Image (tube, rainbow, N blue to C red; front, side, top):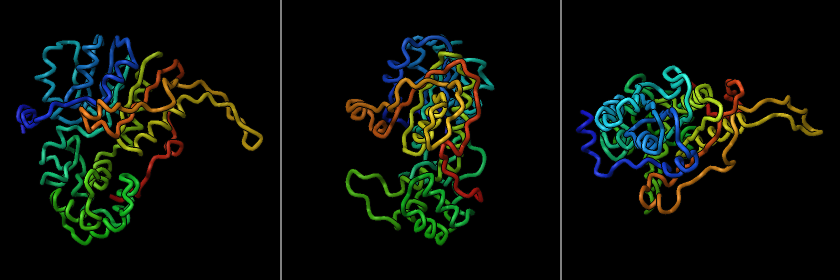
Length: 328
């Protein structure tokens, strides 16, 4: 599908989540910013219109890059678009005054049945954001039952993971999103009014596994740490508890100056933190934003400011990253 056709599929315009909160928290917006999850360009346009001299928009999805050729034209040299993972941002930008990451799935991807992200539209079991590498069909049809159960539980927090994994293995081969959704739904009670679709958690888990989203998230946070100049600002919007815990823990570790200790634990060596937290608590959308954009309901925003300390690699064990068996 062409970018124009994809754009015409949208009956509701893309609304960037917590954009107003971000712009107010990082004001005044100046200098060079990186939008690491370009998508339909909502954050990029907001940053440029708020005063950014230049924005580098990064996305691994070729559709996002194609769409930007149209909406980005009026911004001229103030906008640079790069097809890449956001974990590669420091390969394309030497130094930045700010980085914004929105970890949600793009509405463009959900709207295209052929991308395989949605359990409400029938399409091939794909779910690849960059259209390269292993697909959801590969994992669903080839992974061991125990690995599938781990993926569903650790990445989707699906309590019925073992039951669903067993049913998936029994129903193989599965080729379409609706085939998979029907198998999952048969394992779970019917959703009550207002509850999420029964396949929501399983589809989330498979998407995360296909795109290696948690490893990409940590790599992206470390890339932001490397590219931000002292005083540069980091804004991260998360949409579910696991990824929010990773972001929260990463920033806590990076903002910790060490020391402390007690009579029960040795004192840690003092260290210079790489970030300072703008707030210890995550920001959430208000009722008006949720009413205007239901997608914002589960969103959380975390903000931090870069110090002049040298960047350091994060320990995945300290970040409590989920780690299913890598046999898929």
